[in-house]
Amino acid sequence: MITKLLLKRIFDLLILLFAHVLLAPIWVLIWIGIPVLIYADSGSPIFYRQQRAGKDGKTFTVLKFRTMVKNADDLGPAWTTASDSRITKIGRILRPTALDELPQIINIFKGEMSFVGPRALAQKELDELAPKSYDLSKRFLVPAGLTGLAQINARRDDIEAKIRNDIEYVEKLSIWLDITIILRSVYRTIRGKWDDNAKLPLDSD
Image (cartoon, one colour):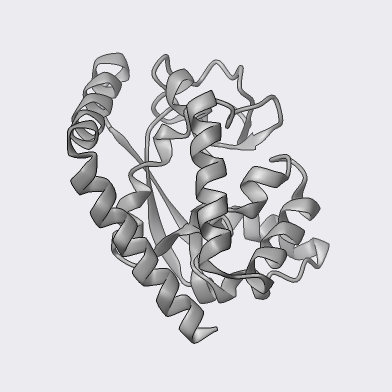
């Protein structure tokens, strides 16, 4: 497992390097354009921050582009749908394409996340899962991911299926599996198929 995790970390860093070198103009447009659009649409803050649990259950601050109105958690329920009125105009573009997740590249660079892995869970989600006796220990053996097997295979509101997929990913951990998941994720982003009508945690991925 240690060797696989080391290779996984090297793989992540290589993707970061080559993607930003080969696609530099696109990244400049993204890193400048999206914040400007968010600010023009609904002001600051540009980023949404949340404490989540990653590898070994350690918490870190997840970064995302903000896609909902300010103080959205005070204006409605903790769960949202694709038609939620609290989603901003820019948010309705970012969420289906998952472009709001891109700031997590900073988390990947810092080693807090990987490109592929189980979704990082907020403490509130962990508290809700605890009474259901789900065994989450295996999914914490690897870094949380920007995308993952559960994200592309299971409905967002099917918790049992997502946990099964997370565990399957850990058991089959390999670079080739990561490449497959990344390619499928890119395809879904291009098609704008990440958002759906299932209930989602507030500002969730």
